[in-house]
Length: 295
Image 1: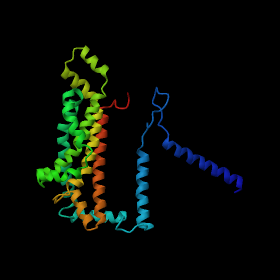
Image 2: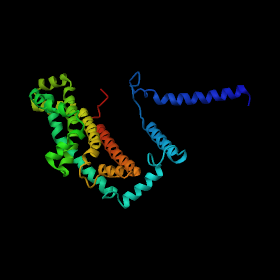
Image 3: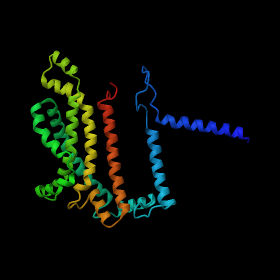
Image 4: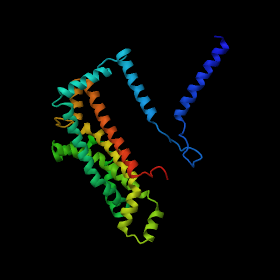
């Protein structure tokens, strides 16, 4: 092959790859009736799958093929898989993987449910009533930046070392973002919609229920997604104190004995559950607020 033919072939291949890579980062196709596609429009599923496979492949190469890191710091994927089977069948640290996962699941989602029935009404009330905003805003804004490990000893003194202490610590982590998002959702409702409802004879409660709550729903669902993330983040701290079972307790015991495979396994399980719940919340968003992002 002559140099000219080689350069031409190389240039064509380079051009195709450049167009393909450029398409990944370009805005999505315009919708019917739109002159231009909106920023971030289009599906990212294929890109997410490709990036996940790339990370797993890189992990495998670094640990199993090139062996750049010792197993104590980063075990190979096969070692994690073997440990998964062992913990699932034989158990580790006082329980099997199912038992640890169920214990953590109950704690996190008990706190999440409690936050839903308290934080969302309080957030809506803060958005529509200045007295409620004046009462609840100072304590929420005061404790919100405090990390859970800071007030964990106080929770132990007040509520002991049982399940109630763990649920309350997780609840406090979830409560603040859900309140603030519900309040922000109320404040984002169009004043024209409120005035239109009043002009048609709606009462204050009807406006709150049919206009404000509906308009705030996107922010409320976002707050639920953020809150459950904070709940799983706080789980390990909550299970540091006298927890016999739970993913956080399993991770803590594994770190004490330098069992890195179990530590990474617990991290993967927590991340996987949180990600699946986030996907569920996205699905609910599409069902409950199909207008979100289309205004």
